[in-house]
Image (cartoon, rainbow, N blue to C red; front, side):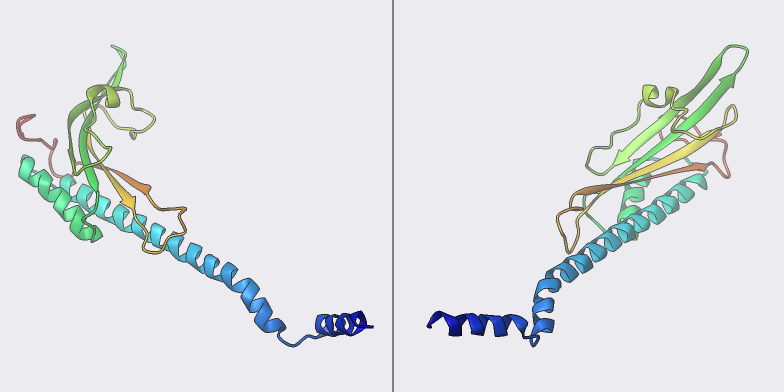
Length: 195
């Protein structure tokens, strides 16, 4: 007889519908919170990348208009400009490389020549070598014989404000090719002389 009231109580408790909204909220809130956190984190990462792409384009455009010889101070200030535009003084790197294309069908020459390559900032980027660019047809654009282009690459590490742990430490790389606008070549001090 003592067991019957307990079973009746459990049966009535199971059939009652009051408090279901509170229970659903308790169950669903962690999923909603995580969904909002993921959404914010990925939005912020794409915003971070977009800002770096715009800053890379600005640096490349600035270099493409240069008619004087570029020196160490100029390159240091390129990095300062990039940091100011991205509002980030973290571990950013900027690599500027000038490449000239050579094509001679008669002598079977179809290669790129490294004019100069400089890196500012600390990280995994290093100056490109002549071997890195010589046969880089898959990564460099189509050019005409004797043409020079400027390749600006940047590397930053995304450090989210709010993190789920999935995107922390993600490397954000940008790359921009731009032809020279007002000069036949972009010279670096001690490498070549402006014509």
